[in-house]
Length: 89
Image 1 (tube, rainbow, N blue to C red):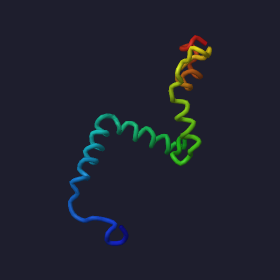
Image 2: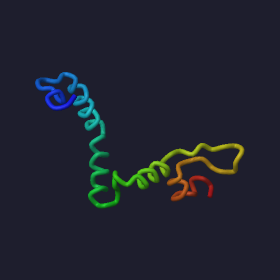
Image 3: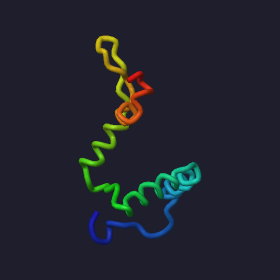
């Protein structure tokens, strides 16, 4: 799979599926998110190469399940921090 064997020439019917998927994704609202994160990146507020930032973002948006054995509420950490009144705090 190197040199001349590393690519194919001619039509590619298998690419039609992925191209159609991207079209459907963009028409279904995906374009909004592409532009949203692109704008954040251009403003310097988001970096896809910063693994710490990506992990922290993922953690703050995940759902914590409520447990009966602990006196802790369940919810998303960002909402729990910024809107404690939603959780009776």
